[in-house]
Length: 262
Image (cartoon, rainbow, N blue to C red; front, side):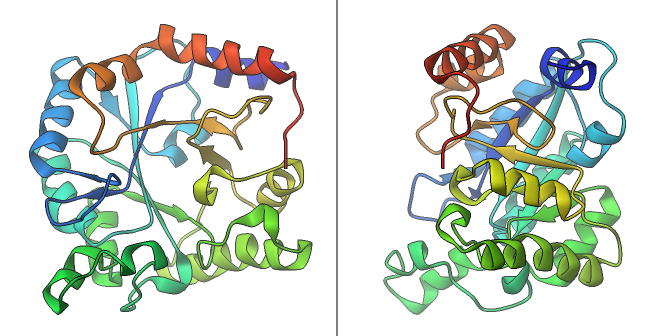
């Protein structure tokens, strides 16, 4: 482990991964608004300071601090309607990963379509518009890439994989009129080749949520703790513990060495 990697390992912030924040979304990916607010209040009361991934990678921590990076995957519209007002209330910011081809469209993700029982239900599964994104950017939220179409990268050809990674960055950069520096691997699926592509496409960092055996730690494989509807208050507090994070990391590394599986 070189000096830069050691810095990311020992002085890592707490990175939490959310998806939807909604009472109307039918599934474990959605954290109820009241629960989300209690979690944000808890972080604030414990003295956590928030930052975006872009800020952390540009200015890595020089010493252990109570830093939290709040991330949101998939770009649900409730990130603006529900989560954003709560974040502002507690003076928090974060990074939202959007699927580039679906921004400002009526797209509904395939895994959400069977949850819709009536036309009224569709609103719970809508994605962010550009106007909503710009409003959050003005406040200080960062927007990163979750590929072009939420493709599962390891099953794609090299050309398809590169297109999902590189084209999404180019497209979002044009839409947002600023560089896009953070990447999120759909479903946490990756391998060495994909990590190298993310670096080669010009991203400054990448995040992964599921604990993955043998996944070397670097700024392109920053670990997150997932928060879901099923996450209890005790489980949420445990996810915040640096001792739990370190134990899980060491356990996974010992399970299978340093190779990244496909």
